[in-house]
Length: 452
Ligand code: UGA
Image (cartoon, rainbow, N blue to C red; front, side, top):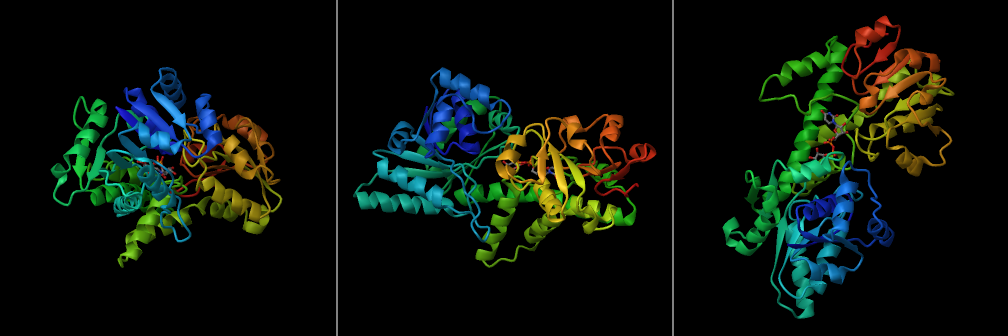
């Protein structure tokens, strides 16, 4: 099947590569010529395990192509994926200008029937806007050409995106008709055919109306973010009450209605999705006159949680002022392991506060250092080190922001020889507090009584 994809960012590129992998003929389009040049030369602009091999194989076997030519892209695929960015605008709402520009482009160049699939995370009602935009352009062209707009949100996790796409737990397809999903048979049939290779063992497709599909995406991320903020709230209380959140986590996770997944307390959620989507859903609520108190609290708790590492550090050293001139080591810059993404990462909140207080940062991350270099290149307060022990040299304290595997069982004796203080602030609860205490460390973690 011939498929076109607008946007070769994270979502578009993973979608394009994985659809080519199962045999479809995919053309990916982006307005960024430099990016397309790189992709054509086999250089992947993002760090995502397994993606480079899939892109290379499918380019070589002629199923995956790249272009900057919108007309060619519209011509190519019966199905046109819209996977361009929806950055937050000033008030936190999703900015739809790129999504609507793609709709305009498709309507400008199409000569016969197309299915437009919204893959980007877009607010409820966006499919209607895309439809209206296309209808307007077609009427300006004096053309009556059939098209359908489908909502097919993605549920990819960074660092596991290829696996998530190839083995989805659900494929949500919103097709609007107003008279039930079966009424729009042409779009339904095409979407079935497109995803058939992923459904051979059992059908994972859930057909529903467009608005429900659009809301499903936000609801999924907001629910996950809620779990995290809830755990962080209880963790903060556990500290004050003399309880251990890690015991509480196991105790509640054993109830299958709660479950063990996604209830790890920490230094707050980050990344490009949760913060943006929780905010956008809250703004949607405001626009429809609904007071979404829970969503606002989820966001507020997370914003506070991202300051917790600095607060603990400052408290340990008798206040912010005493951090002036100190060197603090940071392990983990990415917002989570297996990605180089530092968007809304807790490490950034921490480093900003440390610089504000006059401290210096020595950091290490297994893959995000080029990204840190790109963001903070000429910041004299940050030095990046090629390995985790080197970053500890003369550091008064170590702060752990990301739970990379290689931080789980470090050589504490080696650490001690490098550092000038025996202080660890652990935003991911990686170590046993009693063990560290008996080895003479000051160990401050999340939701467990501070041992120092
Ligand atoms: C998230 C969702 O998990 C995906 O299903 C969704 O498709 C994606 O957003 C998206 O909308 O595109 P992602 O942002 O890659 O994926 O990251 P997650 O693995 O969900 O982690 C998000 C944040 O939550 C991280 O900062 C992580 O450290 C934090 N987290 C996660 C916790 O603090 N505790 C947990 O128990 C789990």
